[in-house]
Image (cartoon, rainbow, N blue to C red):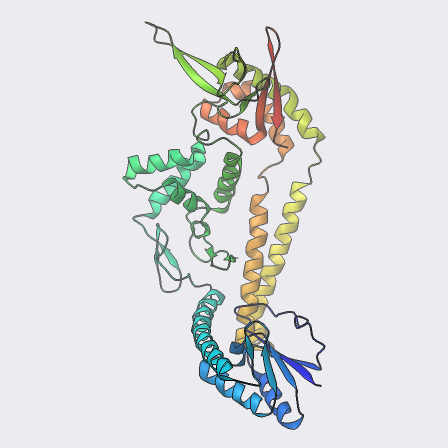
Length: 432
């Protein structure tokens, strides 16, 4: 008994499949990548030497249309070969009325898949040329001939939104600012999509999840984009609606007795134009409840502990050499870009055909984008240098509450209050 298999894959749409997927002991596997040269060889071999079974994954691998699939299926079966589609309910011989009805249904499915494949091939060819995906251009851009172009009327609005978020680290605050200044109403989820959309960073992201860098003019530069990503990661650790809280300790303090988070409350005395700030547990189960603490006193002790403990905590960390890591990533990016620059010469000399060169260039661009993403995710400066700066008490005294909030959340996961009979102690839990 002779059993063979045929595999077809389109390099624009999929990687080459594993040739051991069949689970049968095969005499030969015919494999085509893009064209169907091996399929023609299979048809010729079936005429010369009998084959008992032909295994395929799906019928549509035999052609690009229902007509081609039907013709080639008929040619193969005319030689007495039994065709088995392992991913479809199809077995060619013997055939009864039910199997004929099943074949008609499968051919209709083949036609739909062929139409879908042609559409996906068109999108894939556009990706190889780094053309924008189909659909409306993101707010702040308009479509040009082969790339996105900055819209002079709306791009400044998006830029101002990003600057507002970078300044205060508050997504909801930036959304409110946009509505107040420009009468541009967007939802918080839309604002989050703006902050993470690669298009505003000069990159193109496609439906398959791959990103190509530096395809058009950015609204955000790389450093600003990296800082936005750090702010978003930091805000995910905080309770909801505390990212934009006006007080620097909001969302960070936890009562060690009842394990409840503590919120900042303001108390105004009668006939006095002065507010007193306190930190009190939100949902204390104890009775009597854990008492509130003066906000200014907790803030002062927090700064004192940071100045004493942060340099020691950073010194005990096993931090890799960031400069070395950055140099390594930059070197890898430069190597990939050098290879990319050689493709044109290889195409001119005939070493590579145009289609293969485009596919290789696309893979190189996506690899460069991944390396740039890793490079952007690294801290901008040495952590030990920052620790030395923020360990100076005067540094904190010169900051506003919003600026202190920014630095607290860069280092502190939460602050735990340990109560004693009449006093309390404060413990810092750093994020590293």
